[in-house]
Image (cartoon, rainbow, N blue to C red; front, side):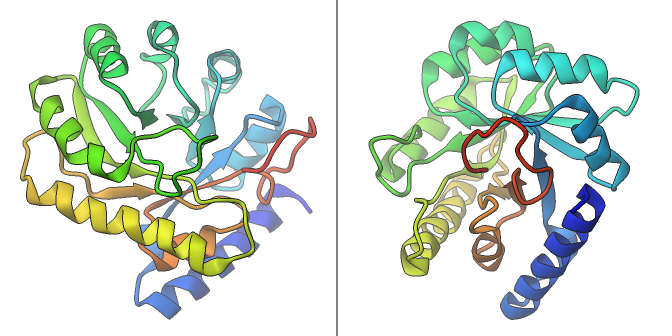
Length: 231
């Protein structure tokens, strides 16, 4: 199917999830994860009405930024961000989804010319293979970031395990939503923490039911031209 048809199907499923959970579709933004497709395929997503594009590597991001500069998408860096790569990407992205340590915050603070919307990445599944902070580390971390004028904590991000056990998936997303409430109670000047980045191709409807405001969808939306992993 083409991207436009895929997006229509995704929107239908989001609408159904919103009805089940008492939400409105306008609360949710779809990020097209384009890391496994060409700039031409990414352009199809933009032509279909997508505004948000996500990349997880600096080289892919910079290449597509150049190729798609006339379309002016909203870029999200969604992968693990090495400190030494911050300089290369910082002027090209609107959101960073993988803030998980003070050394990275230091580098963003140093390189950014203005406040950058960041998601604190949380490992709600406790899987050793996943990056992100433990839930009990998040509040102390956010408090330390009050001294960072170029970092705005837009929200929290997590990835659920790739499993058919819906209860496990739902628990991971629910933990993130509850943790967002705890961050908001801090009433910290640079941590409105209104957003939740969670849900991918295999679990985005559950994420919507549990409060996601950004879902990151790759294979179900733009496909996979390289045979890479799930998104």
